[in-house]
Length: 161
Image (cartoon, rainbow, N blue to C red; front, side, top):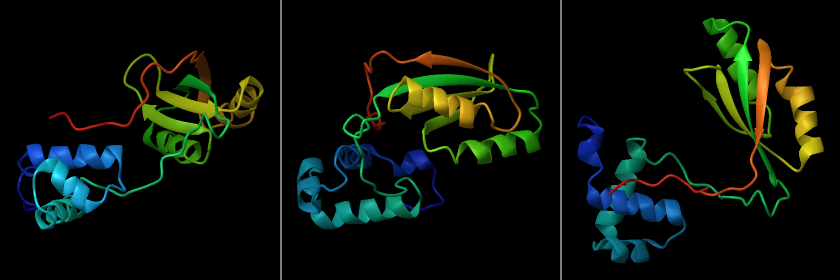
């Protein structure tokens, strides 16, 4: 595995299995991971290090339960901007990154400019975030909100095998 070869050349079936095991449990002992993928510890550790070096694995972190933390209200907000020139987009991007309740933000090609996933305690908290943070973001001209009633699928991304 070298950095100069294509990404697909570096992510073979074994690496995909390693990645999926790490997504499921980043604290899995290397001996258990090696056993699960059918290799010894040294090749598995080498593969992990190589995937870290090329940027496939970007880090490890604790996954928190928003439900256990009282953040049970999920809303999706589509945002239209009054200006979509590069400087306006950069200003919006920088400002939206500072709002802790924004769990995800995507620039969209379609009927609106951005899609936000906002996680709050309840509807009053959501209304406050909308009024005091989202609506005051640079160049926001309009928003539409959609409240999630139930999470049907909510999981981390895994590598298709």
